[in-house]
Length: 270
Image (cartoon, rainbow, N blue to C red; front, side, top):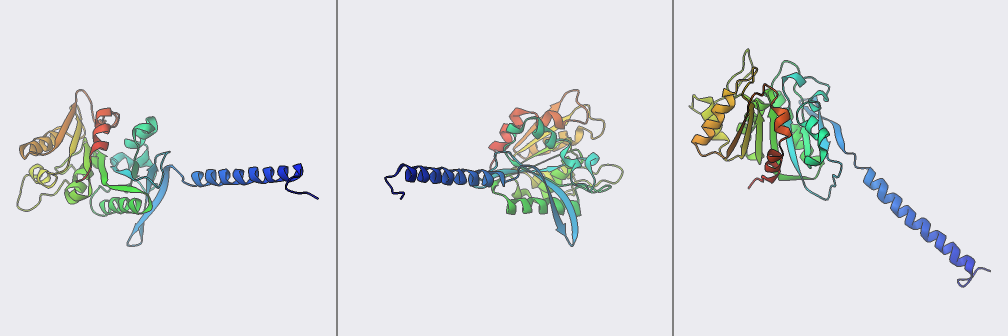
């Protein structure tokens, strides 16, 4: 007979306890592994039309912590419907190169070919942002907006349309006035005829950091200079970095700028 005083009983209980502890540890590892991180495929639909986008979750993402969110708008070269190309230029590249510098959830929608960040693509961008807020643990006081080139224009467009949604914006080599041949600019509000003054008035309360290369042969640096001047004239909270000798690719220097990254994550909507 095996009694509690018997060595075989004690051995059996020890084995059972070890197995129990191992199961708990295994369950913890499985739970931790169940949260997929990195660049994740997602879709959003409006009027039964589906748009693919991606959401980046940092490797240390935990749902019991609220995370800042960055909405990133790509340029013309990344247009399509694959839901992937927009992750390969701009902030996606910056994240892959220095992941620790970007402790945030990043939303990366995509514009179809021959369209811009106006009309339905703008709606999809905001819908993707809203879906991300619903799915993940988000600090809604720290939602940031940034974009490059055509996405820089999209940044101005969404910021002037939804100024209360964002804590800060970073437009890179963007434009405000219509871009030839048929890309729309940022429409003036009310009776104002100057698009830069109109846009500045609508984003007056937003912290803004503008980047542009002074040798940009695609989007004139004058677009960013005029926005900077218009914002300064009305007391806007604006920083402006003009990159000497840099052409259209101002996004790599911008997204590798440690001061900008630190500044961005320090912003919080009041």
